[in-house]
Length: 456
Image 1 (tube, rainbow, N blue to C red):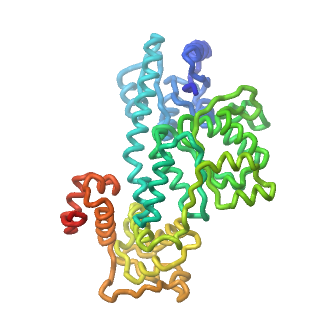
Image 2: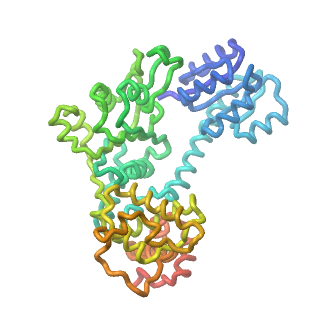
Image 3: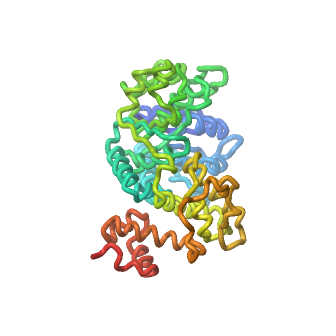
């Protein structure tokens, strides 16, 4: 699919000439005469690049730049009245380049291509830095044989990046997390990952969100809007609660999967798109098919590579313990004044509870505990909801009297030790699995006295 550019300039002749230039080079071009119109177009079309004039009526180019940069826009400033101070300020605010009119057209095209290359490189670097930090490494699924097998399946599915994946499981089991994991480990990882929940949305609204619309397609369609399939070109689109997809949209989705083309709402042009679809549902789609609520042909097209995520009550205590450690580590960044330790009884209650809401419920309970324990050293049972403290939810395993508390450091030590054993003491693989550098792992091994772990 062609790259897209938004031109914002108050001179119609400039818009026409630059627009023709980029269209000849295969770009999709959007045009705006004011900053306000440009911002509206940016939100509707999400172009790959913005070429922004400095002096505009109403909002100035610098004001527009200040709004665009936090939205991850790639912007080149263009002006007929450039000076060094203004250029420096624009670059400080986040502009990719600052060009002075009249600019030679080959130079402008080269600058646009360089800006796109740098933008894609930054996206790749953010991906590599964030993948493990956000817990999207497959080792974070768990260390039990069942979850290790699931991690292996996720890696295999990620490599098959043109095949549709259907994620099954109860609400809150982490289907969205696994969808991000599939994208992050796939050859499409440098391209966008976009998601939408199909539940509770009208057919018309979802049609516009997924496939976009042309200007004038309906009463409020003041501008053209690119849909999520266009935004996700080259990457992955995640459709959560696919079982709730409106019947009117099911044929259109089937067409995209089979032909890789679609039309915007109100449009006549077929748009080609290359995306990998990951869908998720907590419903039995076969029953939905039998009930006439879901197309059978779409079901078979989605159900190529199904993957079922087990509820927490079916996972091992070690898997849940590792999940508690990972979630607490992330939540403490948001609530640094929360307690740094878990009492053994609180931990036992967490590990023994059935978790009908699964990972989502566990995360909410841990966040609540951190908030209630602010200023204290230890998370205690009274910081947990009443339903966890009732006799019916208590763990069947006895509490060891000598184990008064388990700190996050204790949990980290246990997690590192288990990973070392699982990987036969291989330090490089262990560091990669944990998402830390080899030097950091070496320091933690010395700190926790784990030098001999995993080695005969």
